[in-house]
Length: 293
Image (cartoon, rainbow, N blue to C red; front, side):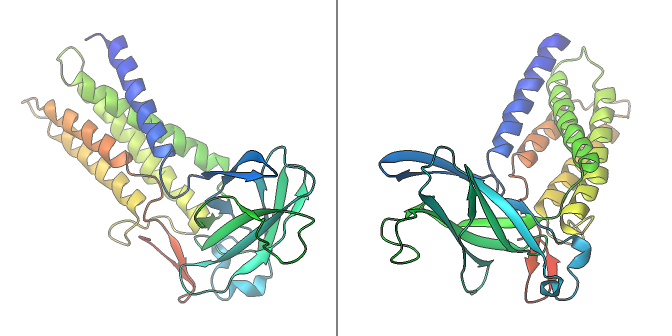
């Protein structure tokens, strides 16, 4: 099989895998549909927001910081009499609800609330009602955007200088892994050098820039084995070890090209696991971030 065909096949597999991973997982927004005054609307309900509390500020009582955050929910073409209502509580646990009536500016509903620490979660509902409904906070005519409560996790701000190299290198590692696995079926391509490229890009993207991204977001460089149960860290480590082992076992005189096929399949399976699954979570009872939630 010619290299061009191999690269095209590898690109297709990588794009499909990336699309699947992006479309799954606990941080993907929920697209909800609802009707208001006999017209259908849709809204993207977020499951991840940046907080104004940095990971370095979570020690002690974060409430003493008196910080707020403002985030947005956008709905296009709503009539001017449409009012938003945001009801949330800390998740998980038995906490009381808080209610916010967002300031509306065109399609944007500005939700200003007390800031929560990175990795803290809330469970929320978002309602739309008419400004003429004054009998109660949520009259019978209020329209709920979504059938279930949304669980949202907060994170610290991740600078692009860490995020962009992480994304590019992880995408490159997946592409090189798929190409090497496909090329290993034949004998016309020197797959060992491509295996080295997989190890280098995966190591740099997942084990160097990945921890920096996580530290900016949640205040910890590494929360996988042996320090914690973070699934994202652990799956990256497993993929790296499998590829390193496949390359080492192919440096001997005997060729074990099939190991690269196995490593590529392991990479696809591992990175099909939704991103941020079983990740960091702020434990309000302990006042610290725990992992594997």
